[in-house]
Image (cartoon, rainbow, N blue to C red; front, side, top):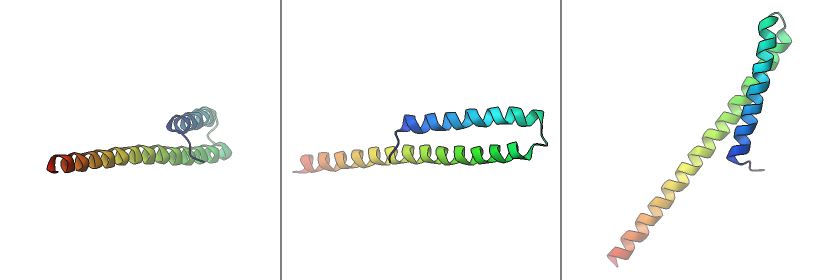
Length: 81
C-alpha cells in the first residue's frame, strides 16, 4: 500500500511523540532498561519513516527531472522539424 507524503509525516510525528514521552519517563528512572529498549525501537521506526520520506522526495525530484527532459526533447524536436 502506498502512503501519501502527509500520512508518512504524520506517522513520523506520532512515533516521535511516543518516543519523547518515553524518554521523559526514562530520564526519571534511567535504570529502567525496558524503557530504553522501547525508545531504541521507536528511534529505529522513526529512522525508517524518515528514509521513506527521503525516498519519496527523491522520486518526486527524479520525476520532475524526467518531465523537464522530455519537454526539452519535445521542444527541440519541434524547433528542429
